[in-house]
Image 1 (cartoon, rainbow, N blue to C red):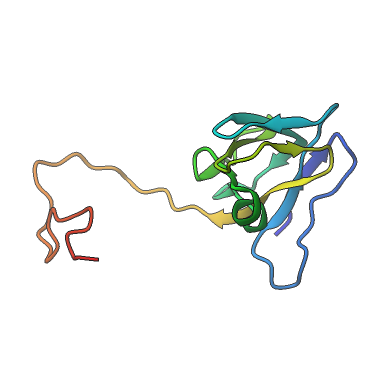
Image 2 (tube, rainbow, N blue to C red; image 1 turned 180 degrees about the vertical axis):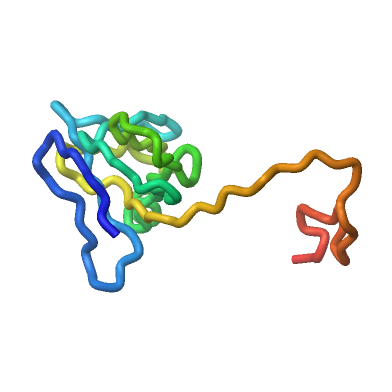
Length: 142
């Protein structure tokens, strides 16, 4: 499968290893951004994707930034729909205890392309029974 990408920086996203599920994307900045603890910012990438119909691009945190610096995505995983054509921007948050500076060209997130199934939504008055039922939020124990 192919996916068309426009890159204002001229940098092409790439899978870093043969077995990688996602490709890294980089910040596209005129000047560095410093995230203070608890601060969140929308970080531009200069990338525009044409995600194939029937797929989504999932923007995910980079594990190294998360564990070493406490940097994650505000919404956990971001979705880029197949009909979106705007710039990919990454909503980063600093969960850490120290300021974190993001520089142009720094890898800030990874993108995984996933197949999407569209279901028919049916309004009803009742749902089928299951063993679990309405149990949630730790009902099965620790």
